[in-house]
Image (tube, rainbow, N blue to C red; front, side, top):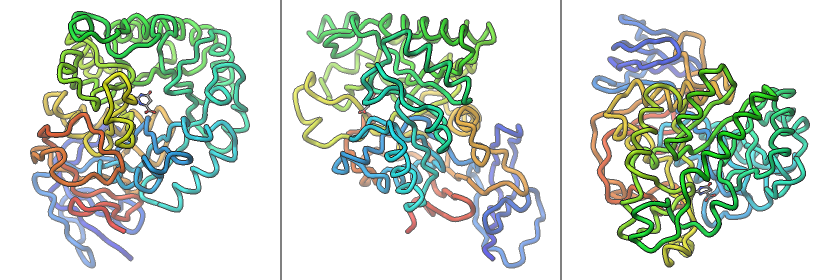
Length: 428
Ligand code: DOR
């Protein structure tokens, strides 16, 4: 019987509202007890003074690249990167090769995730076959396999009729439709956010409205169908306004934002750094402030990484040729804390309890309480580290944060009572 006692940790558990220093006893797969003066017999003591103990993080938006681009990432390397980032569960995006639009691919990713065993891998399925935006996938059949989120991410579902049908199915099967909101005609050939900086840098811009018109349309369709809509990697202040209003009307609309969109703006592209080419693009300083405000007031439920590893050959090219995306799993906590004024309770809520609720993952996101699965992360909220000072576990080297100093370092991650990360190092 394995017994671990985390001593003197600040337990931050949004699901129960707990935020105080305490001891946490883990026995085998579960949390056994919380409090002071716990029975220490047969336990291994882990000094957690000055550290935060929280429910393991849940990422709503991870590109694991397997099957098809194992040179860029695999389920195993992505899982290890996730564990090092404090994650115990993630939702794998379906833009693989082949696309995750059939039971066979979903089962393959599920099996690879189980075999690796470092993080619970929940594959998302495509909304439309081949991400082509036309014929819907078998949402019912895929939902029966446990798929909880459907998305055509990196493509936007352009057809309002397809989106309407998808939301109707989503309602019937109680799953979530996540939209990569980007209207096609407004976004043709874009390289960055449209504004002063696109004109100055000579790069083709995409206006914030390209996102917001789709968000507005999909909110209307969610209202009609009562299906669950999720707006992923929200980038525009206009979108935040629309989502806030929809929530005020009681619609089933949720949203996430990435740590990088909370950090960078269009002006940062002055050096034409291809690691800062992401989709959707970094927008204006006002947009970034709206995103931060959306996180604070809960309009943006979750912070999700959009971890997008790419091969060197896809990034060491001219800016407009570079594939969009930045890695994010191993930098998420520090980046989120940096953008949210070090507000630990807020970051933990947006990275664990809320995404777990959106995905319906009962085992994750807390509450951290006796009898519950020990899916936990322990981090030092004040420890600084330079991104790139040690190698990433992800195969992707394309971090937008390279060279930056982040505050907030993961020390331990535990999946059902087993360390996947201990003292900052991946186990196994
Ligand atoms: O930056 C991005 N990269 N955004 C997406 O939507 C897709 C992703 C990728 O697959 O590389």
